[in-house]
Length: 304
Length: 256
Image (cartoon, rainbow over all chains, first blue to last red; front, side, top):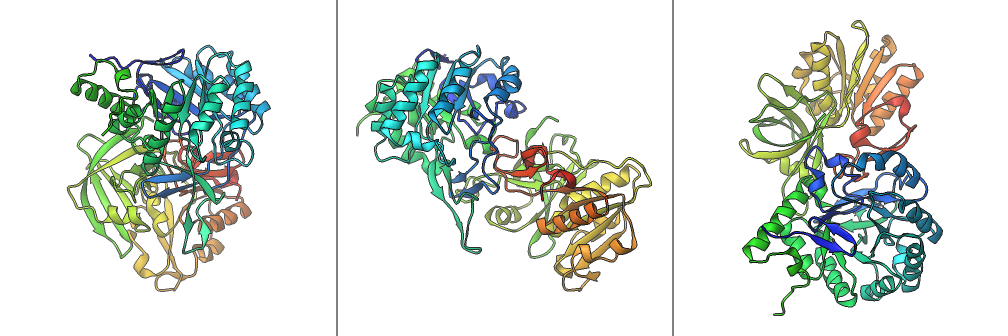
């Protein structure tokens, strides 16, 4: 038996596989297909202080080996989450992590503050990287000063594990990562979607109502892998890797590049059981290669 | 209803015209209960161009033979590949998904099912269910021309069929809403599926005449199970997922 347990600071995961925010609803959407408590952690849909309707339809376009989305953080707001959704999640025997977003620092702070009091939410993932909102979102994640400031302000009020989700839409990811680490983040997750665009030549119109959107799926995996590798070398805090993970081999590659855990996103849409297959695949890999613990492969990339 | 991921076997692939194929699937295990108006999410293959699953309305369920019918129109790479699938192939689907059409209250209600293009797909199954429950549905089917009219014989098993074609090559000339049936008759319930402009026109007629009307929407979907929030439409209850709150909506709830 290999040990799949991973610690992200004070956050204890039964295995390193989590679900990426916005791709797994609140978990219940998948409970017909799998026992969701087997997943290491479920990162629920991006939550903001107030209700957001998101962007108008169309807000998704399939592209080569991926998809562009411009959902725009549609959610019913933190109070609705606490009152109506949280009670349904308290029986799920795994880590429920809330992805927090905002247009202003004040919104991030107030939302995070409210989550302090939920016993079954051991961590939040601060989303400073959403490319699909007009204000805030990615703006906080593309400048070291802004990233440092928002993380610092949230850190002052949030007592549990603070994960910060970074945007790939920057020149030097390691600089942003260091700014976030300095501000007191417990972990970094990356990458959020890559800003992209699709056009319908026949109609000469953009495919998304917002013109641009966030690209996810295997199309972005090499980019994500490189950024996770760069980030893991730049900071001391744990890194959670994501971006186009479709199977166990992909997940293992991220861990070899330095990720302590991974998030699976777009793959959930195609195969709702994929997280379980990835967990089992990692276990199988560790057995085959004679590792006794998954932590042994974190950053175990060898040189040529 | 519990959603399942099933591998179905393609039994028959029938080319109905240059754009439309009828795919008849069977399953080794018995199919779950599927309601009229529900859809399935079909995995195409693992190729980069057809990456996501594709949603299709259930065209018909043959309970006796444990068969599921999908009527597919070739509109892109995914539907093209599916149309080229050979009998015997295994096709992975998530089902059943979405809500369903609402049954009428009284057996003597005048019921019209209005379909256009491949939007007729769910109306065959719905018509069969209505007939089985002793209702008397009638069908109004619109197409570009005679060549694009499909499954007419199937529809005729469950009720009278009226036709419009844009070029007048079959039935009355014009769009479905131009059909004389709307001037001559009153209906208690109208159910519609087809191109959005057609459903909007049918919906406008229903609202004007204070007629109950449900339409089945066909928005582009990512997951089909309410997780990705991509297939939204605006309703009186806000912006909602078509895959879980629909695909069937009462016209009064849509902000069209």
